[in-house]
Image 1 (spheres, helix red, strand yellow):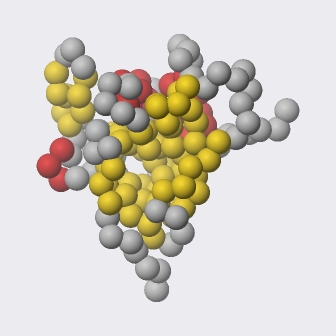
Image 2 (image 1 turned 180 degrees about the horizontal axis):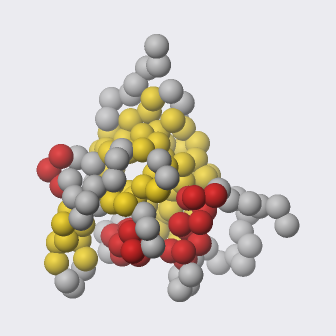
Length: 145
């Protein structure tokens, strides 16, 4: 029987695609919700905005939305939007909006959450960042050149 950790709520947004979750973390005002909205416009689904519940189970980190904010996302300067909710899913990728990527082809980054190590992308301020993140979520990250 797999053990499950108690849920931990983190300051992060989360979207899902193809039964995988992307955790977007960073300080207030770093663009977590903006990136989530861009990814949703490209086909991802909202799991949670601003606060995400995480629990470790079976060697994977699972993300879901706290009930009080289910289906809500902030569009800064517009409104709180109500969106369909994606199913809870295992986190397979993390974006850290507090760190800026400066390398053209960066070495792999990782982060450990609740004892589980995950690939991590740093924010790359470019017009293609959301599309690239979506493809990384869908197909993984290749560091072979």
